[in-house]
Image 1 (cartoon, rainbow, N blue to C red):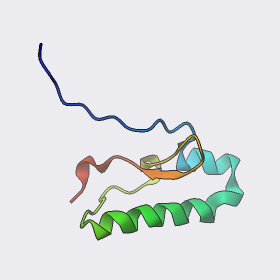
Image 2: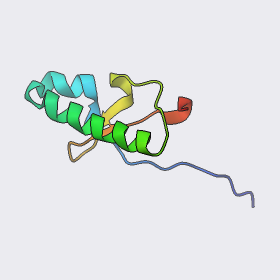
Image 3: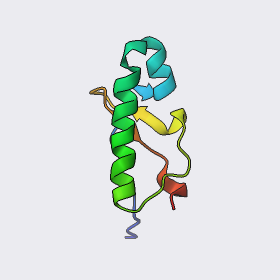
Image 4: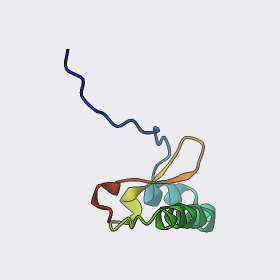
Length: 74
């Protein structure tokens, strides 16, 4: 039997940020704040995202903004 590493992440049922905000424009500042908190955490850990865009901010099933696509981080 071969054991292979894998990465498991939370399902983001809310989709990408830009699509979510089209349906929920009143939540713009809340989602930007959540994104900023995520970036702050990464920076405290000395990680730079380096590819931040709406496609890389997903909304979880419970409506929280989540940063994704950290494969290009510095």
